[in-house]
Image (tube, rainbow, N blue to C red):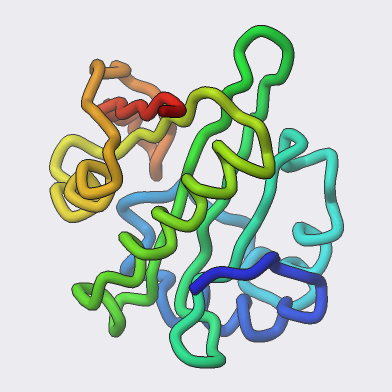
Length: 165
């Protein structure tokens, strides 16, 4: 269901982002134009320091990349924390791909990665993403007011957490 993203995935990932540009616009920060190019994606995939020491995975549908799921902003030491973010191609929504991918990422995070806590945030009206988190044992724990600049507006996010069992 998931595998690590590699620079060779840049073209396929850029195509996926271009196809979902309007769909993702309400949920993501404004992106520079090069984000939607293979060159821009390759640069991002090669930029280890820009990922907070985390992991980036392709969500697969058959042999195709159907989305992306990331563990970022990793904090080690006494916290052992990472943030989870994901998206699935709009045409493939509703098929359980995000839920299955998140289950695998949780297993990786609390196993091989040795993390203790995962956090995620969604827009208050993004009930679909909230259901994905809840299906995977994440619990709502708060509201971060004006957390992320989306378009020209600072937007609130509902916060979710999962602690290693």
